[in-house]
Length: 297
Image (tube, rainbow, N blue to C red; front, side, top):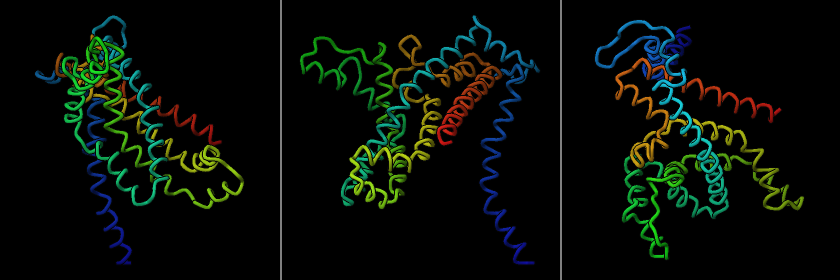
């Protein structure tokens, strides 16, 4: 009896830090954000009264400044999700497959080489790529000019070059995380399955499609979901590399939410935008899960 009570107490103590931090840094901010979104909340003046769904109406009503901010940011963010998720998943898978087939003595070295960029802060990454893709005197333009190009490319001031710069920076910066997840999944594949495939005369593609892919597809689905979430939260790269330009074409939704809160002093509207963003993300991830579930069945 005493041992059972002691076990329960220790179990609660072990779980309590997670519960406390979950409540403080997720549940409480979410509830507070929902409450603020129904109020005319000014950053400097505070709560100016309950307005119900008026904040949401202003965001979703065409022609208002808040609708323009929200729709522009959403369009840019969705565009980045579309162009970034495939390379972030496929390149990571390719690197994982290459490293998985290396001799054991080289695996640790190359895992470290490709993963180390993930440990760098977004500020440092942005500084590196500003130097590489600077319009005047940037390293990439200097190399291209030395190879015979007559005119420097305006990487940060024209499209599609600005998005291409953001994409390259993001892939270089974050690819290591997805790669490590794929490597861990590949390590769990039973080697006897490959031996059986060899006996059946399967080639490299056959072994990947009929052995490797079915074994790692659940991890792959998880990686796709995490990558979509990460791409939806685009902020640091566009803020520091292009500053939302050219002509606000790389302004992400989070950047425009920040503009609403700190630039326009409208915390209530900013909170409503953030909640709408969360709902859109949930719908997209729900569709992904549903499609994956149907394929599994």
